[in-house]
Amino acid sequence: MRQQPRSRILIKRFKLTQPTRVPRTSPHQCSASPPAMSWSGPELAKWSRDGQEAEQEPESVPRRKSWSAPELAQWSRAGKEKEQEEPESSEPQRKWVALVSVVVLPSNEDERAHEIIPGTDMLMLDLNDPPLPSYLVLHPRVAPNPRRTNEPLSAYILAADRSGCILLQVVEGNRPDFFLCNTHTRTVTILPPVSSYTQANDVGLIYLHLSMGLIADPQHSGHYMVAQLHPTTSYSQPNKLLYYSTAKCRWFARNLSRARQQVRMRNPNSEIGVLAHDGRLWWFSPAYGVFCCDPFTPVPESPALRFIPLPAGSEMAGHVAFDRVIKPLVRKRRCVRPSEGKLRFVEIRGLSYKVPVDESNPTVWMWTLVDPEVPNPWTFEYEVAFAEIWEDETYAAAGLQPGEVPDVALVDPNDHYVVYFFQGSKLFGLDLREKKVVGCEEWLIDRDRLEYQSSRPIVDAWELSPPPPSPPILSGDDDYSTDGDRGVWCT
Image 1: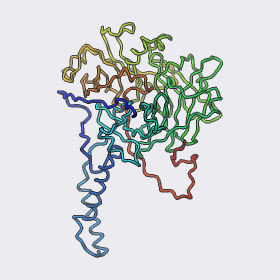
Image 2: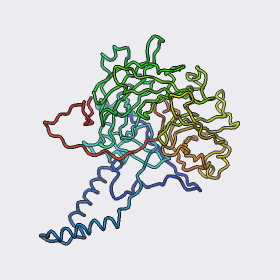
Image 3: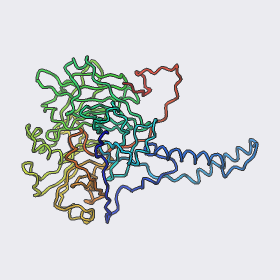
Image 4: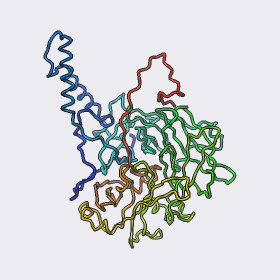
């Protein structure tokens, strides 16, 4: 029998003396119309039956065999006026969630397993307001070899696009496979292996120790690119980009040129994560800076790989990115995340990288990347001392330990003054303008054990968007060409 990884995380809530910035909503409460991504099959069926019964017996229309045109017009106007006078009340749509990178593979005892409709759904979303965790729940039969029940199965999120597409790595035994998940249709598509022709182009296979990014294709609506940066091992060879296009249904490899007027370049092997922003892919090296390129640069021009060093005083020596002792500390004290449409760099300063603990005068800093092509691309935003944060009553009320410097987790996508941290097993948000805790939840998870299973952090902000309009139903004679804009994925 397949061994299931322990992926369910227990939650313990803490009540704060200050009101939280994000309103909490019970997952059992719902608005007048169901959220597209968080309703189970039975709930949708019940909601649909209730709606049909209400339509069959409207209260405002008496039962009659026939209606005259004036009567119909008068009743229609009355209905419209009533809708204008009494608008339907609905809860505000959740803008983002703290999505855990470890995918839940539910057992038969997990109630979420029964919410995945057999034969139709392959996944579901368990969404909660941050700092509560949200999960992708995947049906175990998504494994490429479901009959090999003796192999342990695990799954991790590599990247998540706000359109609802998620890049997934499923590991059965020690064999990884990659999938694209459409969370709106609850479908999963496996990516084919890299072709032998592409492998022969000095690219090789997918490297598990390198990050994989996901970016929407601006030239083909509804399609995506899965990309991995392959740094060169020789000065005579260029860096390369290995990518899969859902519009072309195949893997490609492109040489990357050096950006014009690039004064110096760091080793891209130091990157630990990649994100899509402003039509480009951005690889973050916490010791050096950020690498970026436009993967959709038209052929025959090669995409230019640009290196943006960190702000003054943050860029470290060359060996630090590969030091086994220093590298984990750098990852816990620095991050680059998008917020309010711009990339933000967060750093905890005042700590030594030679010893794990040295709380002499720790502070948290933030910069904004304004223009990657100018000599001074970063703009300083703020500096806040942890001593001021620890003095506020909300810190102790949340069960946090003053004097213990937390680890950087993520930035609120809608407010760059709100940064989330980990202290032990607790994830909490800090309003660094007010120096107050805005929410705290306990996550019982071994972050150190899972930190390097995925290039994506153990938790990251995932912005939500409403589902796209349903495509027209195509007849059997319609063309399903992947070069068009129909958004049909193939493998």
